[in-house]
Image 1: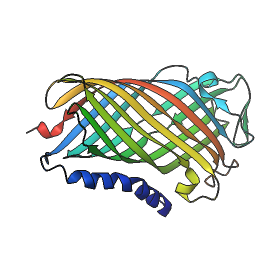
Image 2 (image 1 turned 135 degrees about the horizontal axis):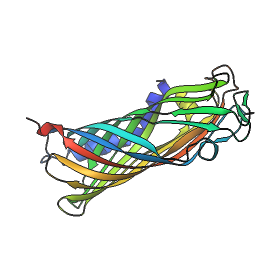
Image 3 (image 1 turned 90 degrees about the horizontal axis):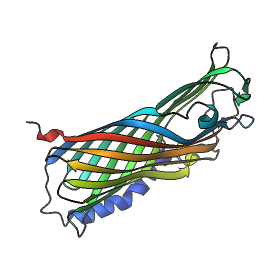
Image 4 (image 1 turned 120 degrees about the horizontal axis):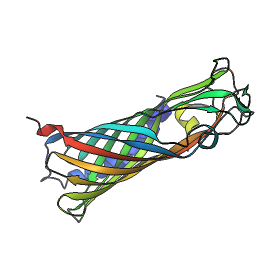
Amino acid sequence: MTLKTVLLIFILATPIFTIAQNETKNQNNASQDVNVIANVEAGFLGVLSHKVQFSNDGNYFDYQEDGGQDVLFPVKRFSLEVNKGRNAVILLYQPLRLETQVLLKDDLGVDGLIFPASTGVKLLYNFPFYRVSYLRKLRTKSESFHLEIGASLQLRNTTISFESNDGSLFRTNRNVGPVPILKLRARKYTSSKFFTEFEADGFYAPVSYLNGSDNEVVGAILDASIRTGYEFNESGSSFLNLRYLGGGAVGTSDDTNGVGDGYVKNWLHFMTITAGVTYNLSSIR
């Protein structure tokens, strides 16, 4: 992580911690018990739009139209949340692996290599990410409405590959890097047991500022969800979740695999529908 990344995270977090300090003065009656909450959800992912291009002379490839991503894919999501008073720290792991196999309708150029039309191609888009978040609960006038703000740091771990069925043609692009994000979470209880929750992690920034590059690369991410749930006891709840996951980057990077000019254009728009459970591990004695 570069010094610029650390400074940017500090700048983003400063107003959040300032609010937290002000709220601390008014929380004498707040609980200081430490709760550890596990969250697991599973369901399916649908591709709304997904396009990628490698090198300026490459094709802007449409995964949904020509890459076999016109079907549903299984998806899972795991998180662990530690709460104390009005503070929460969340550790998240989101696996995301889309594999397809298609017969190309047209020539496909990837980093200077041409995959001819009618070639059978195996496509891999592997984009798991790891995220650590901090949230601070704000004071609200209603006890049935909870609002939290904070920040996240996400580590992306991307592998994108194109391989002909006979293995003679192959291109791959890999990337690992940090992404600072702003975070918001709100929950409204519609009864003593039922609730609706909104959560969003998002950011838009020049990636070159984060990684210290002289070349301009613009990146963005938005992970937003709305869920409805039922708290079946003090320890756990179940929920149904609708999520939008989108983002990408465009520009020329210094970090290339040596076969292209470093230009990348990659934008995705996914939707997931999942069901999940949340359980308070601190209730286990």
